[in-house]
Length: 113
Image (cartoon, rainbow, N blue to C red; front, side):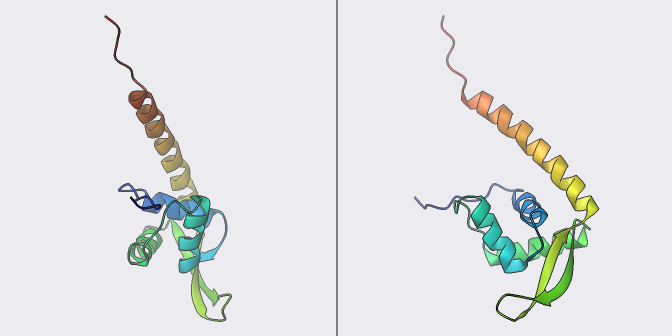
């Protein structure tokens, strides 16, 4: 079994929005931030990250500007838009509801007869 957990379907966008909400980041920085905030439990593949960044930008949830990275390379930096902040709030609330329902369901015990 791996030390890294696989992402549940549909969670990558939420994790990207959360990472970008913490500060402007370039693509690889988003990947590193997700690993950091997950306590290094999640590992995002670049092949999944960049299409997701493109999709979120196309949906107007994040925006980008070109800048210079720490290693002096040109990089696209992403930031959350107003619509992205709203979506992040909605998604966090939905995820918390589902997590609560799952925790309650998984804690169920057989009834005594």
